Image 1: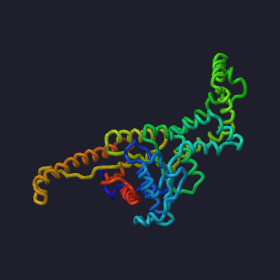
Image 2: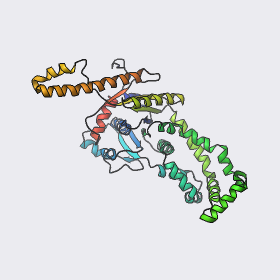
Image 3: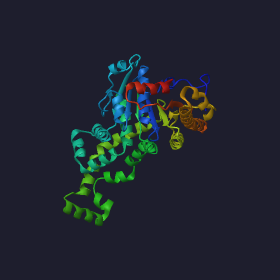
Image 4: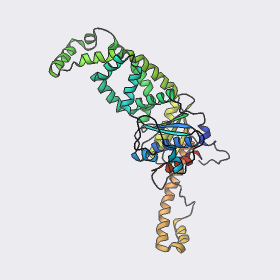
Length: 378
């Protein structure tokens, strides 16, 4: 539903002035990663030091930021590139970018929490840990919130923009702190950490015999490795719990803002409403709704035949008819997009949407990101 500038909300940059953590969530394929980068650039253009953390960006995004590839730690985008592409950066504005390396992030977290070098070496060398950390790396949610917390606590960024996995998976991201706390404080883990009698108490004599035969055949003492692994984690568990509680609090803090990114197609729009409801149910608020790739070529009630007549003098009848038919197709899409935007705005928990029109070409440089930032902020 359209809202006039006189009665509409203040511009986005004002609404985000006191926000330090910006989490972009939404369905896959709606331009969420590019939107996150444009959001970060727009804030940097207005004088803030900003880091954007992406999950799985296309190579062209790294190129757009002037980087050969996105590193696994924040790297500053060369300030000279902004001047070269005619982009003005106010004050002390800086743009930093990184791609999440899930396995490395998990290893670094263990390194930070291990009580000493010997304990760290024991954990990293354990085959159970190697398998577990690789499995965790296959799921970006835990690593994403870990990196978010690290950047927030240990760096001086004015704002951190986090791209997240596609929604439904985004729910895993939102639930990750709670699930991790449930595991760390659960009875199953305490059984593994309890000293003595692990084999007999947990598995029973029959299962222990199977593990013993497995060890003789394969040379791998699986039960011993499990026991050793969980004992080595004893000094890390408390740190994991504190970090996880800190993350859960950060996601609900006043300085954190969730931005729902969608497109006007039916399924992504449904996902957006689903996320708005889910955030509200978990004590987190969807502060902004960004509708990306919106068709804006309306005929405003003009029929295709009338348009063809208007164009005939300049283009000739055959070409004028084809152009009019093409514009009529876009008119259908534009009216569909307007209806979707109105539906999202009027739904319970809906927000006045920020509309980003469909661009004629893909974003391949900073100038392209700046164009999207203009639509976001202006």
